[in-house]
Image (cartoon, rainbow, N blue to C red; front, side):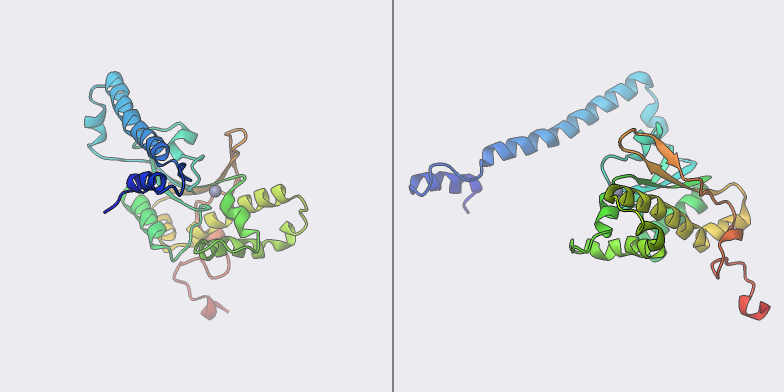
Length: 248
Ligand SMILES: [Zn+2]
């Protein structure tokens, strides 16, 4: 079986080309160095933690009791712990493209259920960020592949608020306003779940918040859409067992 390296050499021998189009050696070195860096960084991190507290990993391995569930965007620039200055063990995290909270997403629902009912978190934070590529993509008519189905959730948010968004002519401002509206709608979506509503029936210390991170300054903007009870859900979303049809 010939290797990429063999093919490179053969190219030269056959006289087809003395210079391969791709320098395989350089690419493999670059890949190796970025990969090796991760392992080296990990060793340094372990050394630093143990230097500060010899019992650090012994204690970390005992278990977790985070008070916060973070539902953020997968974007590499918005890591939950880094943004909030928290340590391992302090924030339970779920991330997906454009921080969507969809009520039929078993991944998100499983994380939410575990965080709310087992870990008993006190705060659920939906954290979007300005300049979100997923939100910007949702505002176009282009096809991006399978992600188009995921972006549909954000297109639906756009449709709900098109009266406001269509008045914004600056594209960046339009994306950023949709980022805010998307966060607010995802907070609303979380509050509509039976998971959050049942928790509110049992305890009064669970709040759902909406944040947007400004990548240009690093600062968080609290959208002030915090919810801590089902009473303003409206329509037929409050799952209180009352037959709304019979009441009319
Ligand atoms: Zn994003």
